[in-house]
Image (cartoon, rainbow, N blue to C red):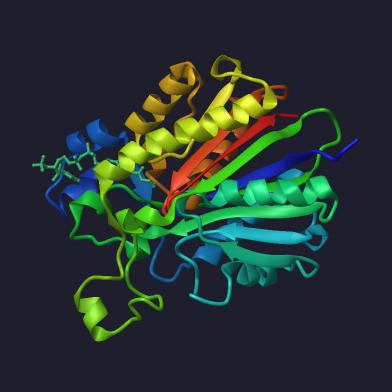
Length: 328
Ligand code: UT7
């Protein structure tokens, strides 16, 4: 019988500094009322000036490895999704490999925006199913506070920092990762991107003056595409495994906006009470968001063995992805 992959352990880390909507009211023309009504976000965490993506990825990875009961030297591969790496190169996954002491692991970063962790889990699933690798650390980590324009109320109130990790390995029972889906559409890159710092607009005094090293987003347009594509990804993984929205026990959509999550759940036929939400505490943490929600849902008992868990993401690129899991 073909091998099946499973999530063997999860972990999260968020930095201690809490930034509330009221704190942001002091910086830009916004209000707690606007942010809560339009997004569902109440607070988020920001790292301090000294802390990089690999530092918080390390904390979350240690928890995930402990939970999975495996040592760092057992890892075959580290896949790290982020848009805020330590450096343009080399990969933050390599920095993390050294910090962890995962000396037997290959390591690479992937840039899939908020779909980063699900892209990682889905790639890891293929490696486990083919038998090529046995234990894979999938990391979603962001230090978005470092690329937020604190003069732009359209974006600075939305995002936060954190790291979410899942260890993917072989399933020992019938449960596990049942179906996966990944897609992209690169025709709308400039709806959500950071223009500066790459080979298109290298870092110069001019690029800094033009504020090119910050997140730019056309929120309203992104909203519409996000709903459509997360519905598509949900339906694809449910169909492939022979399930429908009513069968889902726990639904974890990318935590970007409460209204997006509710619209997707309604269209997929998942009851509202099955939607897991921690966006209010952490904001949109991009690649980390599903990892933060998955780890909390496992630890607070929302996810129990036997549950059908639907994960679905949408992000810059655009990219979108789904993963359907029978939890064991
Ligand atoms: O994670 C990757 C994917 N990203 C997403 O999924 C984000 C998708 N987009 C969204 O979540 C929403 O579009 C936003 C939360 C970004 C914006 O909500 P919206 O309901 O689409 O608002 P809007 O952009 O249409 O703006 C409505 C009004 C505008 O004022 P006018 O033009 O109507 O006078 C904005 O200038 O709200 C204004 N506004 C704000 N007001 C107070 C925008 N940002 C703020 C703010 N505080 N922070």
